Length: 93
Image (cartoon, rainbow, N blue to C red; front, side, top):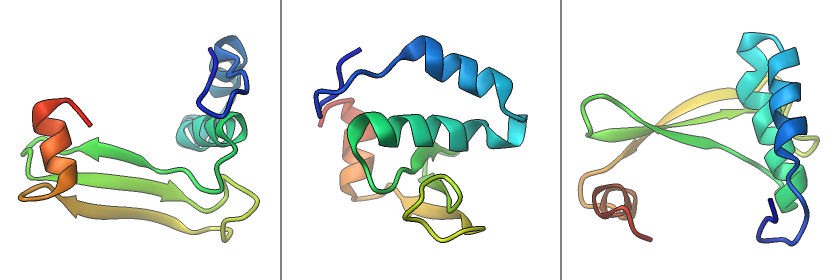
């Protein structure tokens, strides 16, 4: 798969890396692979909660060399009257 930056994201390599990682490190492994493919300095995942009122932004500092070590965070991102909420509701950018 070709990413926006033009580099290749090897899905087989990504899945193998996740499968070989401990379960608690799976998100970090995906973040590192995506960061390398996209040339990103930091990666986080936004996960909708069951209430539909907010997103949880998951980040972990050990994912990338530019991040602070041992910085694990789960930040709440409110959806009401926000760009995130609009995108989630309309499923468009």
